[in-house]
Image 1 (tube, rainbow, N blue to C red):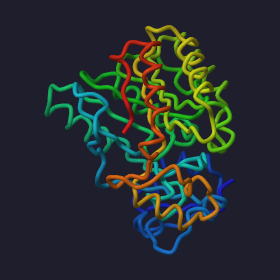
Image 2 (cartoon, rainbow, N blue to C red):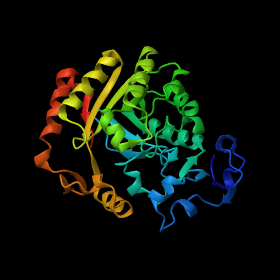
Image 3 (cartoon, one colour):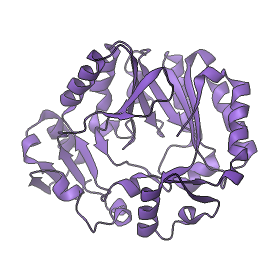
Image 4 (cartoon, helix red, strand yellow):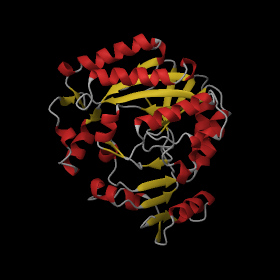
Length: 326
């Protein structure tokens, strides 16, 4: 049960907002003019708030759909965020360095997102790849947001478009109620169980994620495998090779849309902010990492194992489906 919910006056009577209020079950509801009044305040502590999360219900009015570097040269990439912050609490999560607040923000004006997405698709015949799950875990929050009920039908009717729903959850049943569609990918972030237990607090186990993949593949869904971030300080090269083979062997090759692999990295600004608010997080002080080109990432002399894992993936699956995360 939520302790406190802030809600923008403009969405107080919005059906989606009313639905979220019923699900969060909170009698202490405070009306505000704009979510930024609460969410963007200075002198907040993300780590403290993460232990006592409050909620904000709002409408997003700018930066609805944002260009991002695309995984391949054949498509243009965009992301959109129907929610800020995540149910999970991953030690390495960049959101701690991105936002001032750990409060969950639910944006209810899905139709405005839809209009912006449609506008972008009308301006080009280039293949477009839209990502959901950048600022949250879309499936983990599905029971509250009902994200899929709007965006799965939307993308099912678009041409030359892909929607990637990325998750660390095992909530396959949220998608199983829909027919599979080639425009939609469910992409699972995968790590050895030792990494999940050490760094991915609250997330589904590796076995639950794999079982969800299997269920979705049986229903015809396209699956993305996201071996990212690679955490070689917590798992061995052999553990990752075993993970690759286990994941790739769990579903038919025809259901594997794409595979990505990438090492742990943070922007320099995010890393410095995270160190400041969480000085006990040993991961952020690992001396195998350093700043280069405004990123805090593994030093070049330690990247050989990461690169060899990429080469190993090429032996297991066609190279055309593999891309390096940046």
